[in-house]
Length: 198
Image 1 (cartoon, one colour):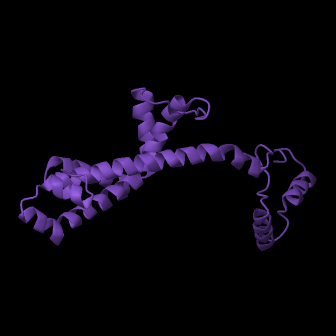
Image 2 (spheres, helix red, strand yellow):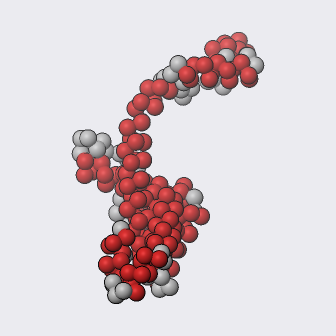
Image 3 (cartoon, helix red, strand yellow):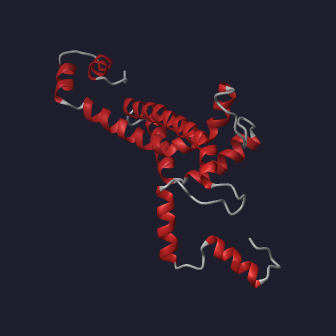
């Protein structure tokens, strides 16, 4: 921060300005105290208050998080229903493979692969950038789709496994078995129990 050719006095002045001459415990306690007052310090790179940086990027984070949750819920429930309906057949294996990938592959690695193949090679999505959803909703959603898909993959895998397990458990309950023994079809049983499986 003081520059590569800074004098010892300049380096000491920077250390004094940042409070680095104090003990680590004192620095930490000061940081915690300032944090509770909403003061996260100043960016050492740009000189901008960290609170302003957070306020600038927080709306983007909230939009992306909400979109990723929607993607995770829709994809997870859909794959869970498919896995229960087609037990022992290839759609269940495909859904279980998706869940395995979603739970075991880190998001950052999926993100790199998605950018490489879906954005750069195929050109389906932009590789970077952001459009404010409040100004242009369609383009904003388009720019958020790829990161939302990647972020939602892990949660979608968990929801898929839970949906599948819940549906299997429900379809094996006594009242469903009794209804089916009396001639009620599988699709009617599912509708009666709140399932979406035919």
